[in-house]
Amino acid sequence: MNTTEIERLIIEAIQEVAPEVEKNTIDFDEDIREECDLDSMDFINYLAALQKSTGIKIIEGDYPKFHSINSALAFLNDKNS
Amino acid sequence: MKKSIDITMPSLGADMSEGMLVEWLVKVGNKVKHGDVIAVLETQKGAIDMEAYYDGIITELLVQPVNTVPVGSVLARMDIEEKSLNESKNQNTSTENIIKEPITTEEIIDEKTTHEQIKPKQIIDEPVLLSAAALTEKTLIKPQKKSTEKLNINIKTNSNNKTNRVLASPIVRKIAKAQQLDLSRIKGSGPNGGIILKDIAQTAPKTRLTEGEPLINMRSAISAAMTKSKQEIPHFYLSVDLPINKAQQWLQEANKDKTPQTHILLIALVLKAVAISLQKYPQLNGFYQQGHFEPASEINIANVISLRSGGVVVPALRHVEQLLVPEIMSALRDITRRSRAIERGERLRSSELMGATITITNMGERGVDQVFGIIYPPQVAIIGFGKVKKVPQVCDEKIDIGEQITLCLSADHRVVDGMLAAKFLNSLAKNLQKPEKL
Image (cartoon, rainbow over all chains, first blue to last red; front, side):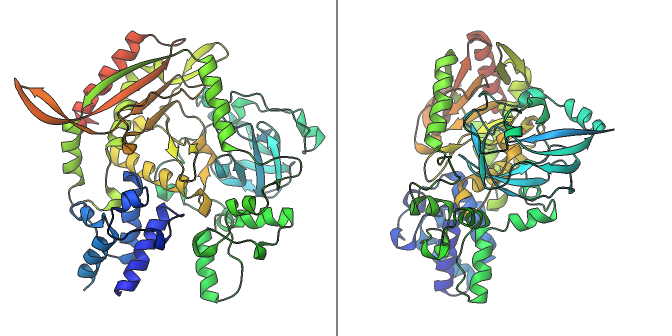
């Protein structure tokens, strides 16, 4: 997976729980829970979808790294390399 | 011995007066089992998989899709073994939560069906089908597999084939066909430009999904149920600040190294604590109907789930008292995900929208300190949860920083008094201090 593919999977995972969200409306540096109006249940469903699509294991200690898209990209790129 | 029974448009909540039959998934002569999905309905709550409540054979399909009919209208008939009826009767039939009389409008169904109304005992709640995602996704009968083909599956198929096929869910196609809408002229707002139900409504705002019947409005449905509640139910309210330090510690330990699929949220723990306290105080778990209260034999907790496009659905988790906390969490996750993805073709099941015996509303996620809910008739209580707050707590003559939530109980004064409600809240508070026992 390259960065572009990971980014696509992140956006798709967000859209799993927030179908109306579009990539160009999200600030990649902001907390996606606020940007995309996700509650705790949405957030873990987002992470579950992302874990499934990327195949990269995400444990509770990693959750803060998924608060913004850019931090999630960095984490997943690192795990993927 | 065989017995013929009516399959009626179910009441999937106090706010539902009518529903639209979108598709039959069975034919006359088909054998069905209890829990099989036999039809797709479109309601204020979105598309719903309607299940059979008995084992038997479909003998008549009386209403053809796509048609809107009042709750209680006979849609079909089936033959069942009388033994099966008796077994189902042993379950609590009072959990059918119809509060409205079926609306008598100028019917679009056959005249012979209009005079027949729902017999609550015929709709028996199914306790088995809820919870885990695996259960809700299981293939029940062949036609259902076809019907539950989801939008995203369509998308994949389409992109693989590189054809110009219009992306739309099966329900959208069905309705479009019935209304002779040209889907290729409609701009889809779903993923990859797929056409979703909302798009059809937007394309022709005055379009009626069925002849003679206007689009059902979720807002007015909520309004009707809540107005009825406030007009008829003498609510009283109690609240308590609940320390949750121990619960949070337990969760921290339980979630250590957990993946998102198995992560447990506080709400799951709270639901279990509520169920255990309700076993001790059954006066808050049941229905007030026809002038008296009937306690329910099972604890089915409805959760208010706000939809992203506005409005709410209130699906229930069944037999919460029998579920382990991780099972409650799994069921909650699944039901929340499906509720919020209805526009993408996900569906709730009719059994999930029937038989709730009490409701919980959690507004804490939205920064609210406390929420005093309006009881969903014919239930007699609703419990509201506020946000988790860090507060100074006195412990062993010292002040520590601890965490608490405010829990509010709205109860029906026709059924319970303040003393019992207070005891229930105390019991709930105590249960949450021993999370390891939940």
